[in-house]
Image (cartoon, rainbow over all chains, first blue to last red):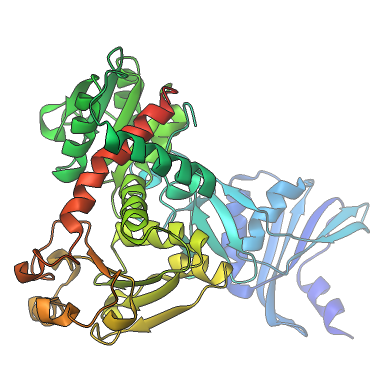
Length: 154
Length: 302
C-alpha cells in the first residue's frame, strides 16, 4: 500500500467539498483559523503529523459541503505556501489547484508593530507582499515589514 | 500636485520633488508674500516639536495665511479619548490643509485617506518625515550645485532615525554612493537597504567615522537617542563613539559640508559651528522655504 492510500484511509473521504492537502504540520490550526473553520457548521476533518514523501510530515483538512473562492484560499499561502486544494464532487476529484500568494493582504494579518495605527485605532491592516517566497509583508500604514517570524493572524 | 497629500517621500515622484525644490528657490528670494491670505492651515502637533512646527507656522505666516491648531495633545479632546479619525474628520472642516505630527506610525497615511483636505506628514513616530527630506535635498542642492552622483556619509542612529530612512530613499533617485556609519546595534534596517539594492547603488558600512570623512561630499550627522538603549553604560559608550570636532574636517574636499537635522547633543562639537563647512543652521532655515513651496503647490497657488 502506498503512502497516499494510507493518508486517505487515516482521514475518511468526503462526498462533496474541499480537501486541502500538503499543509505544514505546524500550520494546520492556523489554516483552520484563517478559513474560519472553527465556526463552520458542516463536518470538518483534519489530521496533522501525517507522513509525507515530499515534506517529511504534513497536515490535511477536509471540509464537507463547501467550496472556497480562490481569494479566500490564497490567504492560507502565508502559512501553507505549497498547499494543494482539491474539489470533490460525488467522491470524485474534480479540480486540483495550488494556492498562490496574493499581492495584497487585507484584514487577516496583524501588523507586528505595536505602535502602528492599525493596532491602536479601528483601521484594518493592509499589506503589500514584497517577498512571496520568504513572506515579507509591508504595512500600508506604518511601512514596517512583518515576516514569517512575526506574523500573527487576527 | 494640487490636493496631493505628502505622507511618505515616495508619494512624490522625483520630478515632483525637484519641482518643489525649484519653487523653494523662488520663495527664498521672496519669502514674504500674500498668496495664503484667504487660507487657513491646521497645525496639529500631537507631540512636541520645535523646528518643524515653528518653521511650518513661520512659512504660513510669511505668506499671509492663518494657522489654527495645537502644539501638544494634552489640552485637546484627544485627551478625552477622541479617536484620530474623529479629530481629523472634524478639523478637515475648519481648514484648507492639515499639517500633522503624531507619534503613532501610519497615522498620517490613515488621516490622508479619511480627510477631505490634503495632509502633510510632519512626522509619524519612527516612520516618515518627508518635509525634512525635502529640506535636506534642498540643502544638498544648494551646497553642492547638484543632487547627482554624490558621496554621502550618514552617521549615528541609522536604525531608528526616520530622517535617515526617508533621505536614503530619496537619494536613491540620484545615483548616490552611501557611506553608512553606525554602531552594529544601530545599522540601517533591511527594509531601507532594500531601496539601495533595488537601484543597484553602492553602499559601504562602517563602525568608525574618521575613515569616511575625506571621501565624503556630505556628512549627515544624527543624534543617538538615549531611550533606544536599555543599558545606560552602553549608551554612554556608543554616544561618545561619534563626536565630530573641528580638527577632523581639516582635510576634507572643498565642497564638503556637515548637515544635521537637529537637535544635536554632543555629536557635533560647537567648535565646528563657525567652520565654513558647517551647514546645519542654514539647513534649518531652508525648511521655511521648502515648506512654503510645498504648501503653495498643494493648494494650487503655484
